[in-house]
Length: 340
Ligand SMILES: NC(=O)c1ccc[n+]([C@@H]2O[C@H](COP(=O)([O-])OP(=O)(O)OC[C@H]3O[C@@H](n4cnc5c(N)ncnc54)[C@H](O)[C@@H]3O)[C@@H](O)[C@H]2O)c1
Image 1: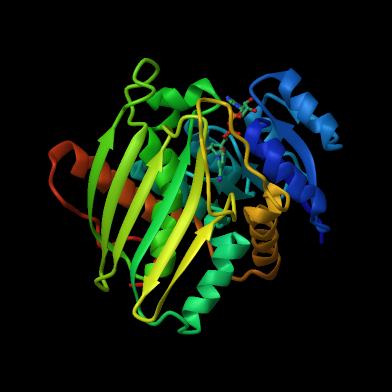
Image 2: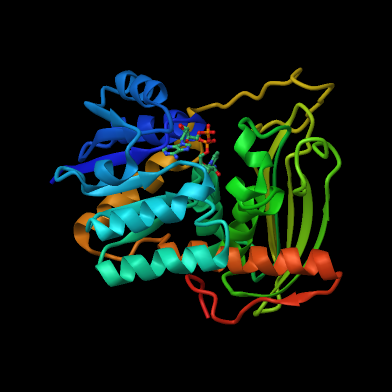
C-alpha cells in the first residue's frame, strides 16, 4: 500500500536527499511539502511534482491522506512536528539530531508512545553502502575483535543562519556533526558508551556564533573499545567524511567523499569533491527511507528507531559537560537503542 508522506522542510537536505529519494521509492507518495514561506514550499513541491504545499504545519500533518510525516527542518521544529504528527495518529521520520536536547527527544518518544505511532531516526551513516559493507566484514570476523573506532565529519561553513543560533539549532559542531560520528562509533563498537571526554573550540566562526565550530571527543565503550570523533564546521573550503575501524586482525578505512588518497585544499571555495554516484545513494538516504517504509508496512523493528537518536543525545550532553568541566563524564547507563 502506498504511504502518503508530508515532508516538513524544503531546504538543502529535503531537496537534495529526501524528496529525490521518495521519488524513487515505489510505494511512497509525497502529498505535501511544508516550509517557512509559501514560495519555498511551492518551489520544492513543483520541482518534485507534489500536489500540495503549505506553511501550516499542524493542519498539513493532520490531513487524512498523510500516513508519514518526514521532518527535514531545523532542530527547533523537530519536537513540535513529531508531537503534532503523533497527536494526529501519523508515524514520523525525524532527521538528525533527534532534538536539541535529551529532554526534547524524551518528549518526542513519550508522545509517540502515548499515540501508539512510530518514530524513525534518520541518521544516514549506518546506511552508507561502504559503511554497511564494512559492518558485514566486521561481523564476519574479518578484522578480529574491534577495539578502536574513529569518525571524522567536517564541513567548512554551515549554509543557513539558523545553524549559528544555538536557540534554533540546539548547539554547534557536537550536536550538528558529532551525532554522525558518535553513531558510527557505537555501530562498530557494538556497545554502549560508558564515558566521554571532549575538547571544543571556536576558531573560524566566532563572529557568528557562541557555539563550538570544532570538536574532538574520545569515547570509552562498555566493552573496553575506544572511540574518537573529530567533527567540525571549521574545514575552510573543505569537507570530511572518513571512518576507521581497527580490530585485532585488521583495519578498515572509509573515505566516503573522495576514494582518492591525496587531497589538497587551498583557500575557501576553491574545492570540489567528485561523488562517484548520486549523494542520495552514496550517503545511504535511499536505502534508509526505503527501510523505514518497509519496517512500517511490515510492523517490524527498524535498524534506527527514535530511541537511538535519544541515546546519541545522551552522549552529546555528556560531551558538552566534559568540555565545560574538563572532566571525563559518565554517560547515562540507560542509553536506548544500543546493545547492553
Ligand atoms: N547528513 C544528514 O543527515 C544531514 C545533512 C544536512 C542537514 N541535515 C539536517 O536536516 C535538517 C534541515 O537542514 P537543511 O540543511 O535542509 O536546512 P535549510 O536551512 O537548508 O532548510 C530548512 C528548511 O526548514 C524550513 N523551515 C524553517 N522554519 C520552518 C517553520 N517554522 N515551519 C516549516 N518549515 C520551516 C525552511 O523553510 C527550509 O525549507 C537539520 O536538522 C539538519 O541538521 C542532515
